Length: 87
Image (cartoon, rainbow, N blue to C red; front, top):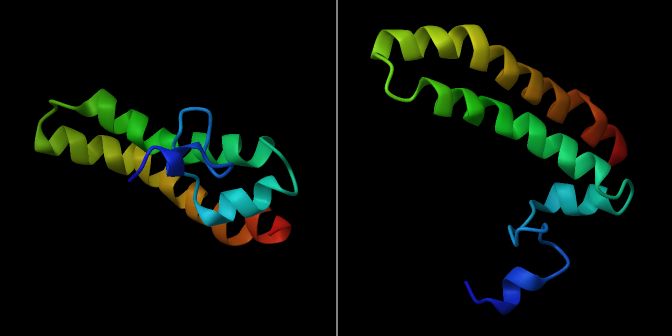
């Protein structure tokens, strides 16, 4: 991907290209919705970083107790929450 395409108005401050739904919602609620969405998406990845190197059983247990509820919450939020009401 060319450097020119990374500097469009559809990128965040780090130059990461934003998904279409977040770009569209940003027109209605600048910065608030994308930050909130990214925080929700990042939460399970944080757990993955924390459990790196654990045994298979311990990773599975951590995912079931910590990541699974976060992923369900993210799914519910995306399908029934603020994004579907705003966009």
